[in-house]
Image (cartoon, rainbow, N blue to C red; front, top):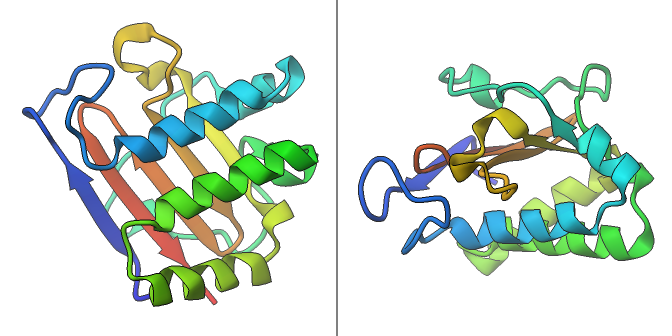
Length: 162
């Protein structure tokens, strides 16, 4: 995949409004929030963490764990078929900005490492506007991390390993 990769956008200044107007990557968070809304109450309780996210710590930001031990949030194995379909759309949106060839290769790596081992986490304490639209969230697996930090503007850290 050529990573780790970092990308971001501050559309209208350093501190963006809750709906991130003009942000080139906010569509990714909107899709992830669509998935969150599709979760039932029990699943939301596991996925929504009442703490701050990993934060940006240089290369440690995208350091994978190599196993499911210690992964926080909701395991994809606990998603229904329609929720897994939405997870696929989230992953597709995350890969959309990249060349088709690279996105396809990245998806092959993600699937080879087992989609059911991915975990979804949303961070309650980093919600711009306290509107229940999660600005900071991540998809993490043993060999993948896609950390979307939309506070105060969008920064995204991604790493997919073979």
